[in-house]
Length: 217
Ligand code: DX5
Ligand code: ZN
Image (cartoon, rainbow, N blue to C red):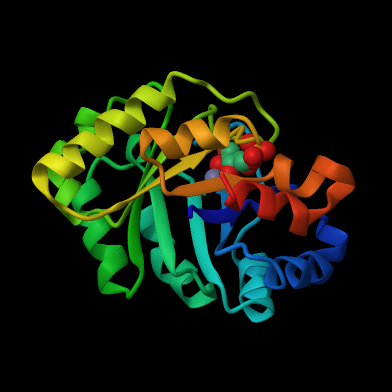
């Protein structure tokens, strides 16, 4: 069964504790926390103080997806705030190998996210050092966007490389996941589904039910 990682970008920030309680009582596996700086992406979301609070509200894995420039400057602070996985964008990291080592040395898993237009081949030389590859199926910056089906081929390509090299990393898909394309993503080879809108807004916000439906894909 896939790992379900609800994106709290779509949570109700005035009732965050309530949403965390619902997630804790669901079969969701990870918390996906989207940090945006208004520079790498054209939007600003939340940062360290919110993650610190979320950390206190759950024992589930906190998967921090930083859509920020110079993510190396904040790796230690995010670790202290409670990050278990630190996922940086390859497009923001001219020294990606160094970023991956830094995350691991700090005791986090090292993730790399790829924008929809970034080819899988850009990862070839560091693929052995990555714990989680996050393939964006929307342009990062906003929740509620339409899934880009082109990414399914990228998932297949990435899975093929993993099989050929006989190495181990997770394949996460992020953006526009719903009750139709979840199956396609899994079939293609993804094992982690990130979802914001579908989990928090569908079926009148029945978080538990929506997570169950995604999980059973
Ligand atoms: C987009 C974020 C995603 C997004 C997922 O920049 O990385 O995690 O919020 O939300 P939905 O499922 O609404 O596309
Ligand atoms: Zn994300």
